[in-house]
Length: 467
View 1 (tube, rainbow, N blue to C red):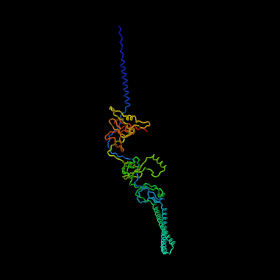
View 2: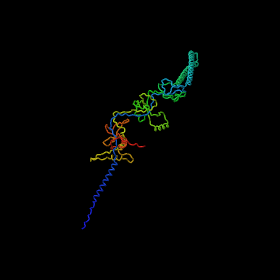
View 3: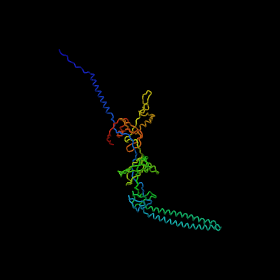
View 4: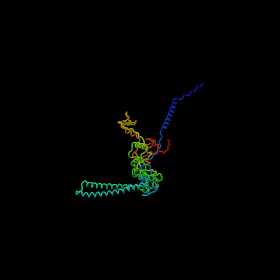
């Protein structure tokens, strides 16, 4: 008897479907996790610091040159040839020392001519006085005759007129004498000006002329500048300050001076004078061409004002040495301060307003919804929303500081005051003890925003980008 074959049981189809579904589900979860982790923004590495109170002194930095407080430019008042020049550049001179002598021959001749004319006028005056004396005697004698009816009226009038003429001639001669005397004085003064002496104790800092050179006087011309005498015991810095900073500078403010020739030494000074007009500004009449050229040149160069700073210390300064001045303009004591790098600008986003309905539920207002998509505009492009002005103001960049709140940051608008090299004064927006982000530069200037996640860590050096 044959045994019937044993038939195998078929695998259930339901189990296969479950396995395939589980595999598909696991694959989908894996892909979703990969996408999430790939697009997830890692926390930004920052450095933080607590807000504290500090003393802040605002300074204005300007460059210039060292010059003597007193310097006299020597120019002759008369023209001629230099026949004596007993000084040289760098020589110390005393008040009254001979500096220059100009050939006096022409001026001696002019003085002799004026003296001769003066003496001639004196003689003419004496002659006029004698004529007047004679005319006066004739008048007195004929007056008696005329009174006794012994002289006609016509003859008497002639003697009276002669006396008046003689008197007028004497007055004219006297005036001519005065004119001649003035000419003598002028010639003598011109002769005296051929000799130039030092007006002060000082040093010959500049010598532009040489022995035998002809110089031009300043009486009717600009004249030749022969030399400059300076008192090197009192020096000052003359620096150029921009128009944005000059309004902060006043006489009496303190300054720190750094002279290039004395690299390891600092000097102190006091502001003595602030320029009232920009350098190179011509206050006289100008033509249209001058104004157009001036406007084109001013567009290429910055407007500068000269500020003079008296140097308190005595040193072997020389005129023309380069100097950098730090002028202390304003200061604050115990002011709330943050590092300069922590302050940046951001455009604040408008927050939608919630209105409470009668049912007690919160809903967005119409204006908030409009501001979320942007202000409502009319056909002509103008903003119709009453909050359009506020929206425009919110779209302007404002100064902010990022305050740490747990593992996130909050962009807090602040009002800044004065600053020094390292810190800003904060007048509104922060309080002492607030923890703020102070680095790194790239995070503050670009990466950070309101609500961004952060993690504290050391500064990471970013590779420099090529221009």
